[in-house]
Image (cartoon, rainbow, N blue to C red):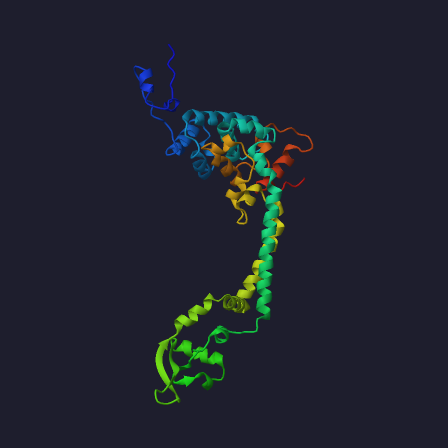
Length: 355
């Protein structure tokens, strides 16, 4: 008799107890909570634990929850590493490719033919770069507009701005330290005096006598800080306030520097890797993924996020074919290939001078 283990999820109810006289439960050896420790131990046993970046290993382990799968990943890694040893490969990337192969064998087969989901992601690189360029151009245009508006702004201080927008009471006027606005050289100085007095003023209100048509002035103490705060609710006020801030030399220098940084960024984006593009602040990764054409079963997989992770982190990049097949010297020899890989992986090799 052959005794084969059957997973509980093969049944949908308690009926499993009706089919067997005796059931021995099997406690899982590995799940997402202890997968990292199992990774380390399995790779130690295989003599490859030092091949990987520990941080990458910790992240990848979150997607493995089956011991047989882990052992198969370890075995396949050893085979691929041995067979592809003619050129120096990134072991972290090779491991990520093997994990992808084991979790998504059907999509991996398409991947080898250049039609898998990851290929779909890479095919959108040009359009993503164009989106980034357009967004950067808008940022540059906005900075130029801020610089231009600050240049033509006629006001020179916030006090002048407040003097322009602050209205006197409809039935009177304000005084500060017993002085009327007319006692100051200009309205800006009057505003400055109010602020220096903690916004405490006296409001003069005109009233008419009961038996006389003659107007009388009634003074009442008042704090008008709230009125100044309400000015910030006006769009026109905020526009001019922003112009004033940008007029300040340090802020203006920052705007100019930011503009130059964006121009450099725009020049460099064309040579960035897919990982850099996906990690850029201009790209909404979730929105991008949702728009991709993808097999429904792939999306429903509990491991789907692994695909996004390994591409986003550059663990599968534009040079993925190096990790899928043998290298044959044709137009490039091994030294040329190594040199180019160093550039692509941002780990340039030392220049060897001819003797």
